[in-house]
Amino acid sequence: MLKRIYKIALRECGILRINPMYFFCMVFFPILVTVFFTSMMNEGQPTTMPVGIVDQDKTTTTRSLIRRLDAFQSSDVVAYYPNINEARNAIQRNEIYAFLHIPKGTTDDLLAMRQPTISFYYSNVSLTAGSLLYKDLKTIATLGSAGVGQATMRAKGFTDKQIMTFLQPIAIDLHTINNPWANYNVYLSTLLIPGLLMLFMFLITAYSLGTELKFKRSKEWLDLADGDIIVALTGKLLPQFLVFLTIMYAHLYYVFGHLGFPHEGGAFSIMLLGLLAVLASQAFGVFAFGLMPSLRMSMSVCSLWAMLSFTTSGATFPVFAMNPIIEGIAQLFPLRHYYMIYQICVFNGFSYIDAWFNFMAMAIFIALPFFVLTKIRRAMLEYVYIP
Image (cartoon, rainbow, N blue to C red; front, side, top):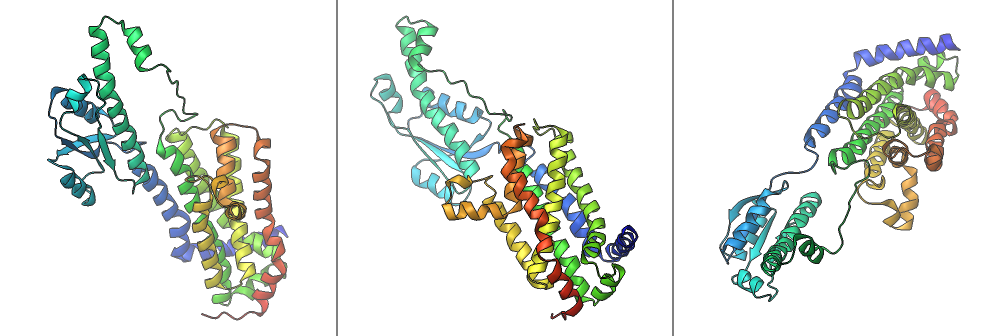
């Protein structure tokens, strides 16, 4: 049996070598997307996002507020506008993401304790940019009243401790678990890149089986295995498995070893996660082809499943907050369980027991090909390829 697997694996290596599709989808594009996404978000958070100002008061106090806003890492004051309409038009032209409106008489109202209104407008089309600028603008609005209150209380003889107790009765001690920098690269690249790698694994697995029918090599392939479909699949997928596993481990070493992404779970958890991802992805590709032994249809199903998995993974919107039906459907995607194992065992370093359901789901995905082995064998012997 081992000799037959070895012969089929050598045959598959020859196919991989002469077909450039395999090189681009198994090596070139996975490396490209890894470098692209990690480089695109290498700053961790968006910085110096353009902000406009509508300052109709033009006093020392308002200029101080504007300087403080400009000093924030996320905000960059790039333009001043005479009125709200021009600033709104600038947002519509994508020249700025937000603007701060300070009406005339703001400083006088502050000094007279008359509670002036400072308005800020921001575009939430880009959720990340909108949320970060909202935080900066809200902080500035709070600092305006706090600054005047601090000066007034100091003039009345209050100590700095008394002033801070009055202005901030409750001090917030904020801790971002395992990612104190709130680095978006850590949150997104650890999902987007594996999701794309799994997409390539889905497609290449279905493609390699479909081309056996397309190029009329299926009977020759089964003859090398003496008609044993398990031996045939093992020999065929083994070279692909080794290449995909190498690429997956290279990606994991790059993000966790070279870039230093947090990984409380340690190296073993990372390697186990990479192994499960490759096995589950190849197994799902085999299962998709077994359900529909057609090159075109099986690759279409794999593409659709991979794209939907980004939405149902729970990285951008929690699955438990989705419709209960969607929450149940989300369990049918390997990327969902990859992300949960990463989140529980690698990122937070919790026990494997806490992710037992996700490990079980990955094991079920790996076992899926056994349900379609007979259909794949019959397709390779009897089906005729239809373009």
